[in-house]
Image (cartoon, rainbow, N blue to C red; front, side, top):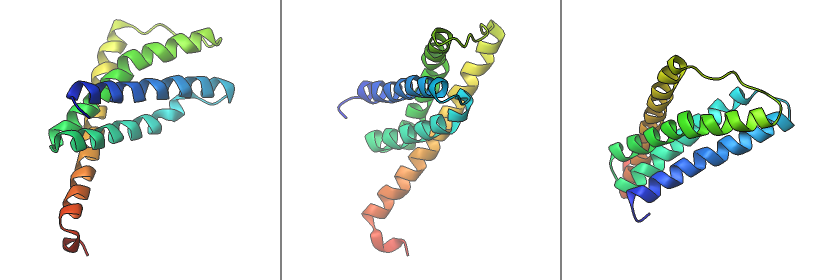
Length: 135
C-alpha cells in the first residue's frame, strides 16, 4: 500500500461491503443480523494485521482496527438500518444516548481486535526473520 489513507479506505470498504452483504443475507435467509458480529470482529482483527504489515508497528494495527470499528459503528450502522428498513424490517430509531454509548464501545472493540491482529502479524514477521527460533 502506498499511503495510510489507502489502508484506511481499504479497511472501511471491507467493513461496509461486509455490512451490506450481511444485511441482505440476513433478510433473505431469515437469520438475525446480530449473528454476524463474529465476522465483524474477524474483520477488525484482519484490519489490524494489515495495519501492522503496512507500518511494521503495533500502533498501525491499533489504528486500522479503530478505523474498522468506527466505520462499522457509524456508516455501517446507518447502512444496515437503511437496508433493513427498505426490506420491511423497520428498526427503532437510535437515540443520542444509544449512539454515544455504541460508537465509542464498538470503536474500542475494533481497536483491541486490531491490536490482536497486529500482534499476530508481528509474531509471523519474527518467525519469518528467524525460522529456527520457533521449534
